[in-house]
Image 1 (cartoon, helix red, strand yellow):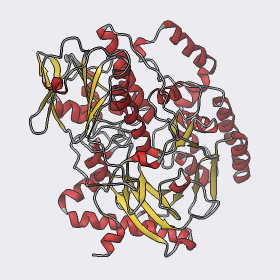
Image 2 (tube, one colour; image 1 turned 90 degrees about the vertical axis):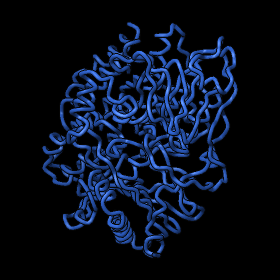
Image 3 (cartoon, one colour; image 1 turned 90 degrees about the horizontal axis):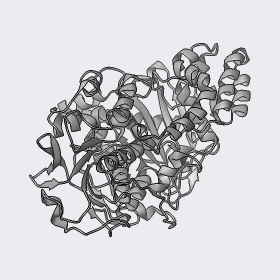
Image 4 (tube, helix red, strand yellow; image 1 turned 60 degrees about the horizontal axis):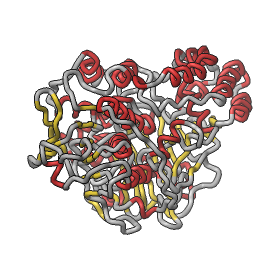
Length: 594
């Protein structure tokens, strides 16, 4: 999950536990294959220095922007990434308080196992350099209001036995799901290396050889909505639990992605990388700057400069202008099209996405409320790393702006070391929430807005102490981030972390924007879009759009596209996170102390 910051408020920054100073401008030496060396002021000149490679400005240091910068450098282009915030990663981020690290984004990462295209992209971007990966035996657990539990084991044999024990009457449906899961274990389809319009016939044939033998399997599960499948179960808990395999019900998803991701997790290809979300972004940042790429933080782009329907650079807040032969926006899509370009370059597909669908109910992935809990001591043994607790009507009503009657509890201390001080633990509680509720409240009444965050903190504290009586008295703090917080710090429209909802009309249009339009806008030369607002959500998809943008650009310029794996073998350590922001400087402890 990632996008670039656009129009975000500036957070306060302090040194992290390792005392590593935050990056401002980062550059390194020229990468192999680059000829000539331009002065630093070259970016402020309309004409590039003779004998130097084409310049590319990238708006946003999310995963897509960093990937575009890195692949540009590997291909011999000069690249400068501009980031409003003080950290890379967009939503793939973390913040800290009192020694705790609150990891915001990754729940699982496709591509953590070797031998597939997703993993190759991460190896090229240095994302997994020197890191261990944590894999779990189960995808998620769902607990009903009566205490009954459904454990979604990644192993189909174990899953089938467990579900049959819970509900023998649902045996046909259980066996059908697990049979399909076994078939997905034999399929590897990760199309992240070549931009769709540039695929050779050989690449297309290889894809067909993978898809054709299982076409009916794909078609049937893609055409069956999960809610329709789940409603066939006789057991009421299973009817709800299957909807919540992905923690909460994304609504409208077919069965296919559930099978695909559980199969990936079974193979260790959907694990959790050491360092978490910000660790991933920092590793890609390190790879990018190691290739000679430049990055400037606290650099807010106000508009894209256009001359004769060609993008020629950008103007920063304060009026400073930077120039390049190509501009890539990896920022929020709505901000890019309507603000940075004043809505001048659209067409039927863009109009459909950013005019009709943008505010249509169900088009965007829901925003979330996050409550991070710092706990003195350890956590209960035997609990799943991730559990969705179904709430009764009275409990659900206590969650401000809640969209579903459930809350997700993740034991983040079990995901990787370094998220809590020695001898302490951190838990992440989330629920889907209405962005408008929080944004309107914050705009109208800041005191009421803080009070609602306090209600979230109180609910989470009471809920955990009831579930885990031995935790009572050991909760040190609860830190709450609302969808309005997400919007302020990432620029994501309506605080949506994953942008457009997959398997929707927006997904179909996005595929055409990437494959047919080559990530370009009608009537505008010298400009591309990258990231989840053009290529859909998910970190590997975001990173791949950065790769595709450079592939298309190299094809246009007549340059060879080059990509090669990072050779960095240095073990990853928490010091690489650098300085961490504290967002709104609000937590339950501070609020209660006033």
